[in-house]
Length: 331
Image (cartoon, rainbow, N blue to C red):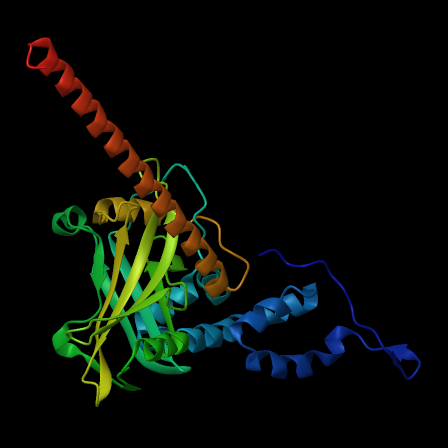
């Protein structure tokens, strides 16, 4: 983000003027109290405020506040500080939503051999789950398998204070209060992005097991084979209807428009391009919901087209079969 044009604040004072720099101390006390969005807005105001609001210590505090998981890992804190542009660059990379903008940019470096996930889940603004996980991506086993990152083993379920929902409407209320952030970091190239849309796009409650699944989604450009792909985060919670829920699974996977799981090899290439792609400039939950609904509409159109093509092919086969039978005198 380039610095805004210079501007000054002047006011009459004892026959002279008071410049912005004269109130530097007061502003310096206010800026650390701002949230990330307000701080980012402040730095767009004018050049002097930009220089203050992009100071490393302010954005370090903001990153640790927005993504508490980053505070638990000394290595991750070091990576944030080492980003080109420092904590400010890390924040501006991970706060906006990645957009599914087509890009055929030439990849100048191979996909990373390691990814770091920093994941935080809040319910009613209270942190209920936070974890940092390193995933090695260079092994043949990983690259030949479907792309999937699992943060939890069900045996290590995390208890929460959330009551188990007893109805579909109660599930909807839970989803309204739930937020998730999945920051994925490429430590080699010092790049990062948030692959969560912030709020669930759907919630399911299994009629038999009573498990509740919250679905988060980010749609990215996939390439020529599948113009759009979905990076889906699934959070599975379980528990009896008379007790609190436990977070049992938190997983990230990639699907194409036919619902097929992409291989890790393909997923890494898509991610590699997306990390260099465009970001949104609106509220990430609103922008993500609009993108996701457009993605679902494209999927329905694609499915209907394939269905019609299948029906047409079947009709052609029937006609050919009938003509063959007629040619041998059976009709």
